[in-house]
Amino acid sequence: MSFGSRLNAIGKWIPNGRKIVDVGTDHAYLPVLLAQESKITGAIAADIAEGPCAAAQRTVDLYGLGNIIEVRCGDGLSIVAPGEADIVVIAGMGGVTMVDILEKSSPVVESLERLVLQPMNRAELLRSWLLQHNWHLHAEDLIPEGDKLYEVIVAEKGTCEKPIDDVYYEIGPLLLATHHPLLAKHIKRLMDRYAYLLTAMDNSAAAKHSEKYQEFLRRKNKLEELYNENYSS
Ligand SMILES: C[S@@+](CC[C@H](N)C(=O)[O-])C[C@H]1O[C@@H](n2cnc3c(N)ncnc32)[C@H](O)[C@@H]1O
Image (cartoon, rainbow, N blue to C red; front, side, top):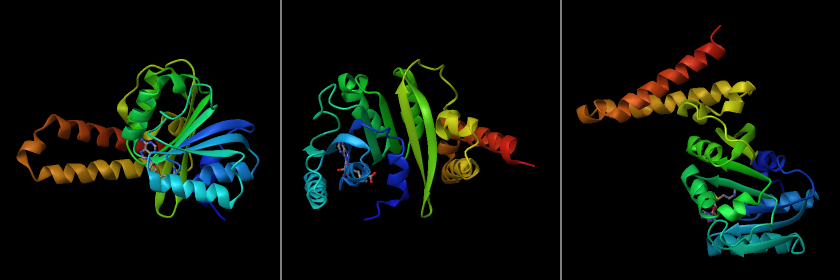
């Protein structure tokens, strides 16, 4: 079975010989992919909902990988003890849910070597949380799949960095510093989102005079400035 470019690109951030937890595993495709490549020594495929847990167990049984992958049903990392895994992967959820999962299980999170995160939105919240909780950004990637662009954030324990403008948390400081090949498309999408929000707010006088409107405008302008700095000829 092909597991898709997104899961393959996430999997490349798992070094060999580690034990992982895949939070929100759904069908357990990522742990199965990594076990098939003999990359991991063990995995906990975790999900909050019974349907995905049952689907995960079916996939694990189908591939005969029950000796490597254990399915556990529960909220976030509540079903994991500190030291049971080296790396936690959380993919395909919103940034708010991810921060909540990390926040609620600090002893487990503190025992990890690496976090591999693929938020569907609000990546800036996640980056900001990481940098305020003794993690640093080890790598960032953008993965195209269909008409989507997925962000991957790889964090390791280490010095907190100085807080930076939220706009950089939105773009991804490493994507910017390394001039990721898909960065222009990524910044353009962020700019378009603010343009859309501002246009919607233009219809209401109260919204147009709100602090939120001014903040969105500031961010859109800052994104435009960064885009022009990097991509205008
Ligand atoms: C869209 S799927 C993502 C599946 C897979 N991780 C991927 O990236 O393809 C999101 C999964 O996260 C699970 N989920 C949502 N909140 C969760 C939580 N707090 N703890 C564990 N799993 C959660 C859902 O039940 C669902 O199966």
